[in-house]
Image 1: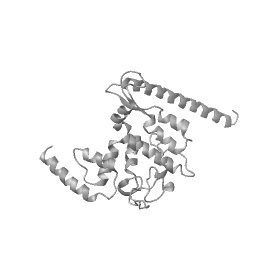
Image 2: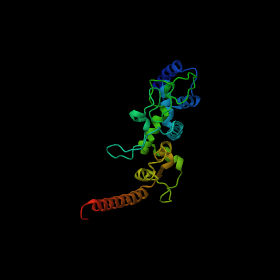
Image 3: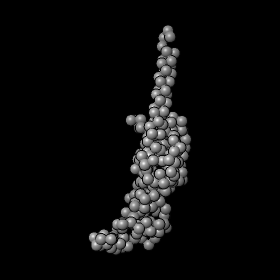
Image 4: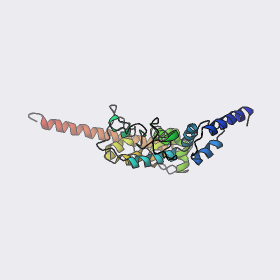
Length: 244
C-alpha cells in the first residue's frame, strides 16, 4: 500500500467512524474495510456494498415490491415511445406515488442511509430519501443488464444455455424470454411477479453466435406477428366498409 493510499484510508476511516450511527449493518462494514479505498461515509459504504452485490439487490428489490403489491387501479401501459424494455414501475407514476419517505421503485418506506429496514427503531421513514440503495442497483441491473456480465456469468456457470457448449469470453447478456413476448403474453401478470422478467431469473449469458441466431429467430417471429396483425386489421376494415 502506498503512502498516499494509507493516508487517504486513515482519513476516510476517521471520517467514517465519526459518522457511523450506533447501529449499522455489519456486512456493509466488512465489505467497506476490504476495499482498497475505504468509503468515507456510511451512505457511500452502503452504495458500495450493493454495487458489489447486484443480484442480491435484485432479489431484495423484488421481495420489497411483493410486500407492497400492485397499486389499486394500476395497469402496465407502455410509454408514448412504446418501449417495453423499461420495467414497469407503478410507484414512479405520479398518481401512485406513496409520498415522501418511500422508495419510488418498490413502494416500501426508506430509512437512514437508504437502508430498507428500520434498524434504529425510530418507526419513521427518512423523508429525504426516495430510493433504497438496493433498489438503485436493482434498477440499473434491470435497465442495463450488460453492465453486470461478470456477476451473471458467475451465477450461471461455465456452459452456454443456448449452444450447450462452453461459455466463451465473448458471452453476451440476454433475456431468456424476450421482453416483447412478456408484453404480449404476460402484461396482465401481477406487477411484483412481472419484475422477474427483468431480473436475474430471466437473464442469461450466451455465446455470441448463439445470441445472433436467437435474435434472428426473434426478429422473424416479430415480423410474423406484425404481418398477422396487419391482415387482421384489413379484414376488420373490410367488414365495416359499405358494400364489402
